[in-house]
Every structure is written in structure tokens, then in C-alpha cells.
Image (cartoon, rainbow, N blue to C red; front, side, top):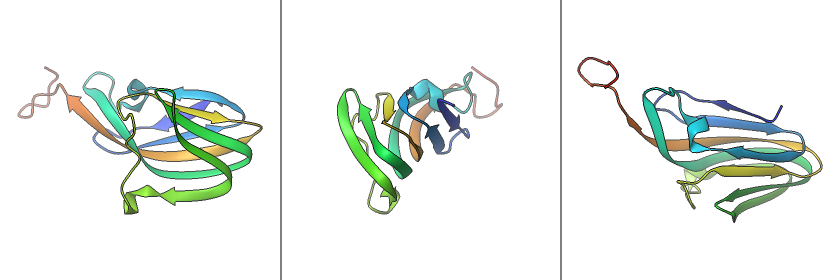
Length: 119
């Protein structure tokens, strides 16, 4: 399984990646509705991981996090990681492991507020 993304419209997305590999999560992967929602940025809010090697997260080739062992970060208590928030999130799991991230997203919607129809 490369990665899985759970996306509610107008809510945070949950990203899960398992096993060794490099996974690129684009902003389009974070859309709750591909027809009406355009995600413009995403901030990492929570991270939970377990690895017998290293897990790195980069955005626009800039290292954001380097993780080893296991743990969790609840960044929503102190803010979030918003570096390069309009770029894809690239997760690299070396050797093996898993990571779950919750990201908040900013988006625009092409739905008429009075009718709910796509404009």
C-alpha cells in the first residue's frame, strides 16, 4: 500500500503511509470533492510514526521533519508545520515503518452558496 488519504470536504485530511518507499502527496490528493474543491495549501497538524529506520518529510526539496523510532507530535497544541504549505508533501520511509499525519487545508470552492450547485 503506497499511501491512503481520507478527505472530508471542509475538514482536515488524514494521510497514512506504510512500508519502505517514497510517497508524494499532492494538494490534489487532499481534495474531498474533486469537482468542487481546490486545495491551495496544507499544514501538518499531527504526526504519529513507528519505524525501524528513519522517516523524513520534505516539501519543495526542503526537509521538514526527520523521525526515528516511534512517537507522536501534536503540533496543533503549539501551531503547525506550514513550511512550503503550497507544495506537495513527500514522505520517505527507509527500511520500514508507518506514519499517520493529520493536515489542515485551505481551499476554494466552486459551489453557489445559495443553491449548492457547481458554478
